[in-house]
Each structure stands twice: as structure tokens, then as C-alpha cells.
Image 1 (cartoon, one colour):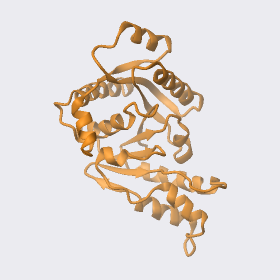
Image 2 (cartoon, one colour):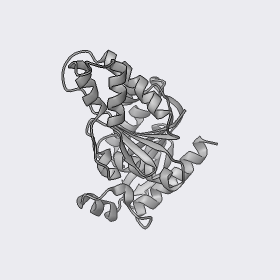
Image 3 (tube, one colour):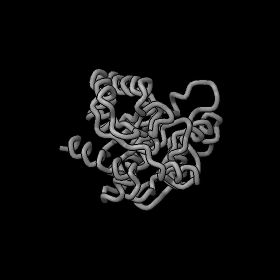
Image 4 (cartoon, one colour):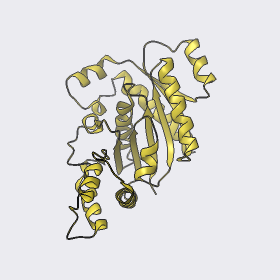
Length: 252
């Protein structure tokens, strides 16, 4: 069974960037093969990783509902579409979940997707899931539990509150079987004592800090995949130190 790493947090805090850096970290540390899963309805994980998307699981679900699986079993149709949606790269693949576009019940289609995703996931050592703020996507499309949850937040109180809710939700939904950590991103200078006190009051375990990085902003503005930043990047260097820490602790 794959080791599942989920990255979540409020929009605009660098969540997808951190997820992309985690994929790159695992590749560079020979922990392949890896399946990157874009579970955010605002899909852009592929841009961070430098890949082109060929389809989403949401589109496969829509097509099955519309009867486009005629001539083959629904299981075979979904399995075929899941494989067609894979974007392949050296050391890792990417699949995007997408979202339903119409009204109606998706229970049967989701059930088939869950079965197909679980079969697919078993071919990988690691799953890195870029989530929306909630954790519903994990239980909706795969029955595999989260071994490591990284909740990304900027230094603002509202973002920290969102991180606290995500952490609590993951525990309530019983999708988290491992540890949850807070990762502070876009931090200028050293975190203030007041910020650290707020993190502690909220019951969040701080894994580390990723600084505000002009190099990252430059890559993003130029449309370059931020996961390919060099180690000279302060953000990437700090992120890799965080990953060293959390994986060593979580897998001890």
C-alpha cells in the first residue's frame, strides 16, 4: 500500500507549491515511483510540476453518466479513462480529479473511481495529494488513509484558523492515521513570539517555516514550474529541511 502524503490549507498560501516541492523531494531522494494527485477543484498542480493534463477523473465520471461507456462494462470504461488521464514524468505521474459539472447523483461513478484509484495507487510507493481546504476528496476517490498531513498557512490569523479546522476535520473524518503538521509559508524574517504563541494555542504542531522567496515569485510570474527551483532558492531549501524532519518523525 502507498504512503499517502496530503497537503491542505487555505487558498493562496502556497499549498500547491509545497505539494510540488514534496514531489520533487521524493524524486530527488529516490523514493519513486510517486503518484501526484490534484484534488483541488481549481486545478493547477500540473503547472507547478511542469506537466500537461490530458483529462480528469471528473470528466470520466461525467462521460459515464452520459452513457458514453456503451459497448464496454462501466468498470472497464472507468479503468480505461483513469489510465488515459495519467500524465507521466520521470519518477512520478500526475492525475487530476476535477469536479462534476452537472446535477445528479454521482455515487455509482464515485464508487467505480474509488476502486480504480485504489488499484492504480498500489503501483506507487508514495501518493502526494494536493487538496482543497477540506479533506472530503480523500475519502471520495480513494479509501487509502493519510499517513502524513501537511497543513500550509501564511502568518495571518485567518489562515491559521483555517489550518486548525482542516487538522480537526481530518481527525474527525478518520482519514488521518499518521501525524499532522503545520507549515508556515511566505514568512518574512523570523516568526514573532506572538505568532508562535498563537500556533501553540491552536494546538498545531509546527514543522518549520518557508520564507518569502523572490526567486519563487519570479518563476511563477514567468510560468516556470516552481517545483524545479534550484536548491539556491531559500524556499526550496527550507521546504526540503521541513520534509527531512517530518518524514523522519512520521516514518520512525
